[in-house]
Amino acid sequence: MPIMAGIKGSAAPGRAVTLAVMGGALLTFSDAGLKWLSGELAPGQIMFLRGVIGGLMVIAITAATRGAGALHPKSLTIHGLRGAISILATFTYLLGIPDVPLAMATAILFASPILMTALAPFFIGEDVGWRRWSAVGAGFVGVLIIIRPTGSGLEWAVLFILAAAFGEAVRDLITRGASGRETTHSILFTMMLFMAGSGLVLPPYDWPDMAALHWTVMIGATAIWTTAHVFLIEAFRFGEAALLAPFKYCNLFFATILGFVIWGNLPDAWIWTGSAVIVASGLYILHREVLRRAPVTALDPVRDDPELEKEPEPAPKSDQETEPK
Image (tube, rainbow, N blue to C red; front, side, top):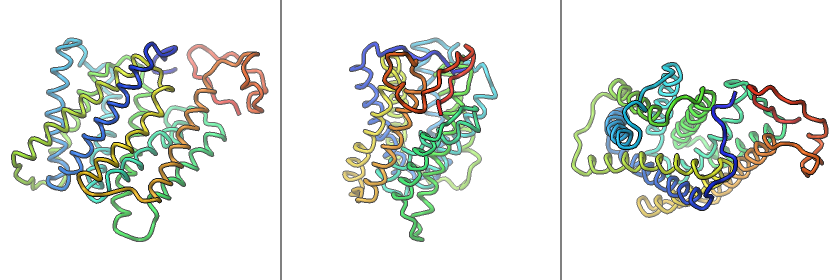
């Protein structure tokens, strides 16, 4: 059963794209703040403070827009699993990002949608045809081009970022397989609670003293992150996922600018090449997903595809359609 009924058409595509690009840009600014903080503070310290500050912000936003009832979780199992995976993704990202250029880290995180496709059969029983498996393989080749295994110490930091991408993919699959009854506010709030709690127990335990600049960046990065998610949520109210998904790759442009302005780093040819392979793979997977879910009619040119020669059988209303093979 799908999580929720998808939006049929885009009510305001221009507004949706604008909100999605703005949300992606703000997320990149937040990541830049985390990269700087991770070189100054302990990972657990960052996670605890981000969880507390972000949790208070979510409470304030929810109280002003939906009421306190929107914070109440309905499935503790779903929230618990999602919170645990979010901890893994955030902790590994904080371990790797101090030594990885921002643009490179952003490009590696593009592997998350590809990992979602690879893991979907095992987590939610979704059928993946050979065409999408081929795109998954190409996406991993793109990751290898970016990493360029050479035996250097950078590889370990890059592997932490890749682990964060894996965590993001599993987190999104858990959300995708949920009942759809949970509010965005409750999901964000419980994630902040898990973040704050885990920050107290994760090593190292010797937290450095914080200067005024640390507090400023921490509060600012958390506020930007929360605002970004509000923009992204609103974007999906006005536009379909298929319309907005390609604009996620604009984040590499913002990461390149910030990486150069703050740290003087520019992506080399290997990063651009690997990113192009990953983006192409992700867009092809999105293309196959659109075809898989589109109704097949006599006037549909997709019927010329050998994969779709067989007349589809009507699926039960409670089941997802599977990809034609």
